[in-house]
Length: 264
Ligand SMILES: Nc1ncnc2c1ncn2[C@@H]1O[C@H](COP(=O)(O)OP(=O)(O)O)[C@@H](O)[C@H]1O
Ligand SMILES: [Mg+2]
Image 1 (cartoon, rainbow, N blue to C red):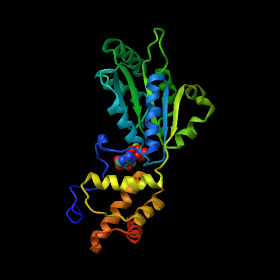
Image 2 (cartoon, rainbow, N blue to C red):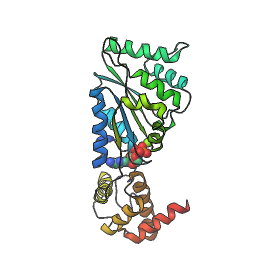
Image 3 (spheres, helix red, strand yellow):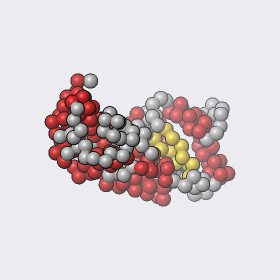
């Protein structure tokens, strides 16, 4: 496909460096809302359907934060018991053998880290809809300011819409009160989807038009502007074009791409 379309690499891949990405309007807003909690030292909640760019926003945020001010801790997929999570985080802080009470140990280490290294710990949790209830409640405790006005942990969580549903349970009232920024990530608009397709192709050096405007419209209609789906469909349509010996993609090839994706 690369040589067929005279490209410098595979298009629509997920491993594009964040510095080369152009965020959509909603993604930029989501990123800004999450940056806000760094100042207010509250909890940030980023909600979005699968494939809308939540992980990408967390990654962009991590890249933007100055390392001499913040210490980023990551929890890419918080499945497992709360204890397992605390031990995992203590290890990220450089302690190989957490004590028997992993939560207290984590709290202690966060404060020690703050005092000794002078950097604010920030925890980024992706796939937060997988968090167990006891972990959510204890995470809130980690964000409580200490008597000497120190915030052990700033918490930013990204998850699928079901996370919002879970948090509506009255038992999370205290947690919800601490959420300072809440943002629902939207898919791209039609115009953004067109620009997104062009941008991905430019990144791999496309010189000529590959997708016609009608084809881009068909991609938008079928994917509702969800980036991961756009990637999959555009790649499938390009594969169909290769097989048929065509270099320009119209809506018919996009429809064939859809069929190919459904069959797989
Ligand atoms: N603004 C963007 N520019 C380029 N690629 C993007 C953009 N937004 C999302 N993507 C791509 O779409 C896919 C889905 O994004 P991801 O952050 O993994 O979504 P989520 O975590 O919400 O499921 C990834 O391959 C990502 O690289
Ligand atoms: Mg993700």
